[in-house]
Image (cartoon, rainbow, N blue to C red; front, side):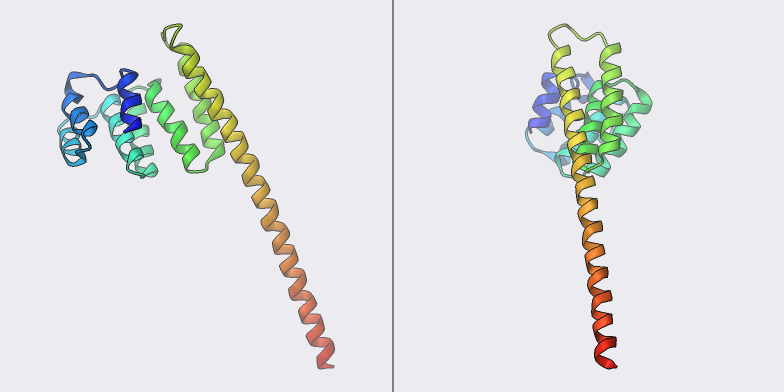
Length: 169
């Protein structure tokens, strides 16, 4: 429900067509939410709603599908770009997260956000950049540790074979 509150407070889900779905979502009635969304024509806002629904339900891959569909309707939709960035971060994709964060930063720069709203969005972008960078470093460290363990395992196998050959002769 945090995602719902955030989206509503940003004013991104207030179109007349989405009010029934929004009401159902707020009350936790996902079945009614889905039925309401299914009757609507695809648009950036409808796809954003779907993306948030799937994200909240723990289905990030489906959330990304709807983000991509929504961005075809409105490439600079801040909510969709934010969801794309957060979902890629969740999926552990540092390069995609950074790419999406840059797209979000460009959309923020080109937007007509108020002076009060802009710093919050820019702060979110910086947070995404930092977290994606940290994720990338963590993955590099893990990859290096896996490589070291593979070398150690290979050395043990070679040592074991050498011992077997020596004992057998």
